[in-house]
Image 1: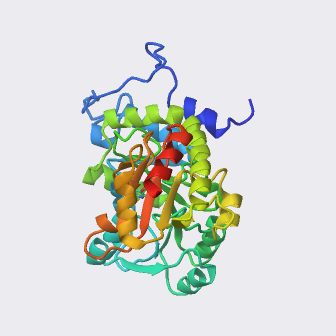
Image 2 (image 1 turned 45 degrees about the vertical axis):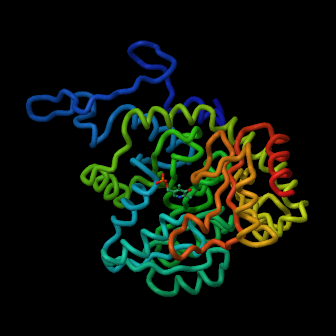
Amino acid sequence: MSELRPGTVAVHVGNECDADTGAVAPPIHLATTFRHGPAGERLAGYEYQREGNPTNDRLREALTSLEGGACALTFASGMAAMSALLESLPAGARVLFPDDCYSGLRMLFLEFLPERGILPDVVDMTDVAAVRAACARPTAMLWIETPSNPRMQVSDIAELSAIGHAAGAVVVVDNTFATPLLQRPLALGADIVMHSTTKYFGGHSDVLGGALVFARNDALAGKVAHRLHVTGAVLAPFSAWLTLRGCRSLGARMTMHCSNARKVAGFLASHPAVERVNWPGLPTHPGHAIAARQMRDFGAMMSIELQGGRDAALAMAGRLRVFTNATSLGGCESLIEHRASVEGPNPRSPQNLLRVSVGLEDADDLIADLAQALS
Ligand SMILES: *Cc1c(COP(=O)(O)O)cnc(C)c1O
């Protein structure tokens, strides 16, 4: 059989029928401990839940196949995945982070990593010359987030991976916004893919989780696995099961998310009260050409900048009825958030910016809701 396409992999891999019962839906193994031999022999490969369990292994298999990697690790949250990876670097390691990125990552590299002797540097990842210049100094890791949060900046994974590798750096891509259904960073040259599976993989705003997928099962992968097993930010089996369940509809959901986003972005881009729509599918987006090359479709995350500043943005967000004002993204329901209001004392997002996660409702209802809120 020819190699299965990602939409099929998402439905099948990790979801194989249970060998003992033939059950078409996978079992959830809640056991914290597994019978072993008198000298600790792992009879069926498992010992203690923190060290690994069968439900997590199914999800890891699915993630590995979907991203085209060699192995995967699952964590209690996206932040736990990021922390485990970054804290596996030796003291003195210099890491390049994107200027526009998930706010939790920024807190991690500003507040926590320096305490451990890891040296963060911030660079505009859309500026290839700037990244090349930054890589002239010793660089242990290059962290890419594309499309980025919340400005939806696009960076060139293939080109930045080549630059990073020439400098001897490990290249990591946060693929949360795109999912492997739309973008496969390992095939473009990256070494590690990171996910907050809380978002599109879970897909229903009801399960927290994170993952790392490694291109190679190498020393770094082993080091991060060991750190996970000892420090213990593991994904609970029920969470693994819910995320695996999310995988089965991921392909269908992403298709509809993208088609709704295209309609919503088109409407917003033509509205006089909207100053700017940040969605890489629009031909006017500065990263459109790169996104068109490296993504299968443009995703359903966007941000808008309104005429009339902060007041106009808050008023609009307050008038919406189908969209919910809430943080997070990737669920069935459309969400909107005034990022500057939730970014703490020194917000980085423009005051007129609203981040939008386009959900799976009927696009006409979403557009009608946006129209009444903008008028
Ligand atoms: C949510 C998110 C994270 C953090 O993941 P959690 O599961 O909330 O810990 C990291 N990166 C991006 C792009 C995210 O959207």
